[in-house]
Image (cartoon, rainbow, N blue to C red; front, side):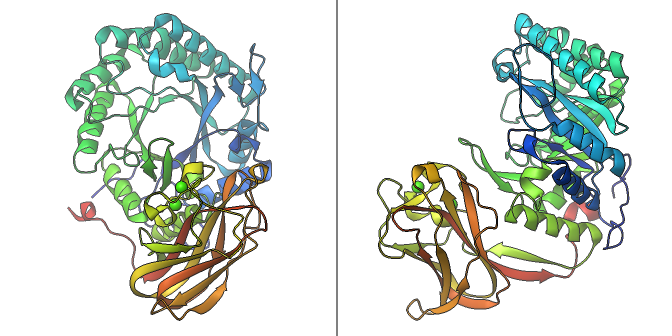
Length: 493
Ligand SMILES: [Ca+2]
Ligand SMILES: [Ca+2]
């Protein structure tokens, strides 16, 4: 059993009422591209979030380094974007959502957590951001709190003197200032790494000291580490969440989870894909037994239908789970399957391990992840062996890099053919190019609405004449219909 308290709202939609445990909101990263979104786009995005029961948005930093995402009069900063905070707050006012605004981040944080002078500078910039955001946006009814963006962990400030320097020169002055100007709650989002030697027990007393001294920090939103694979629902999450929960309880603070809904594929560059629905429902059902609030990291990048096809697929599955309606699960049955390619791939952009086209990674503007053909005069044929005959094949994806400034163009046409014996192929159809193509990005061609069977799947690509053709992923989806919602074993214990 779990008890759902705090943030949860029931939201009506065409599907009735939410009947299963949910996430309450999300962080929203603010970066160069997200900051450009229009008022209409934010309206659509927040409406989609409300449909899946989200009522809380926590934005990324208003200032990162010298880049600001709102009109600032601070010296030496450059504003980018089209005032995302103003747009998010305005939409949230009308939809009854709560917004926490992120303050300031500097990449130097990671090497200066015990440097009082550096931290004084970060505190000064953070309070300037808070003051400016308050004077710009305090009239918005949806503005409900602050998010101090730099992250704390169970290692960097483990020494008592370093911890005190961080509290005295940064955490306490910034949180006190936010309380003083607004009276609104202040949040932070720490993480743990169980491979580091500071144990959960020692971290508990670290938090008791820190929260006792930084009395204006109200809300701890702890990263669950499930996406980066440092979190585990049976070991590390009970240990570290339990420790911080006890510290919060004894100091009168609130603990929420920062629930990771991605699955990290590689470290450098950081690459991640949306997590599976079954993992996400397991996180929700277990973490709800510990904390009253779940916000995810993060909705737009991993779950928004406006972001891309895999993200939209997770949104659809999650919606069906929430409302308890039957839904279809589509599985990429080409994942890690072997394939052949003709003509041979360019040695300049090789196919490392002969595996890049089915490794599950849609490599956006990552040259190493591409499989390239230079001006191929014959149409490349890539034939995937699914290992056995599969039925209910409903969707085919082919992802291509476009970078016109480097002579990399999207194909003219992509066909799919299927075969049971690898010799006789039948045409299955033509993939549809994306309606909005993006240069210096991957673009996914899709053929959907099929119902095919076969063991060998061939993609026949007609390149744009005289240019580079670069593919990074081919996927084949098999559909199964589920008739009941996910039910995880923790629920019945
Ligand atoms: Ca790939
Ligand atoms: Ca490659």
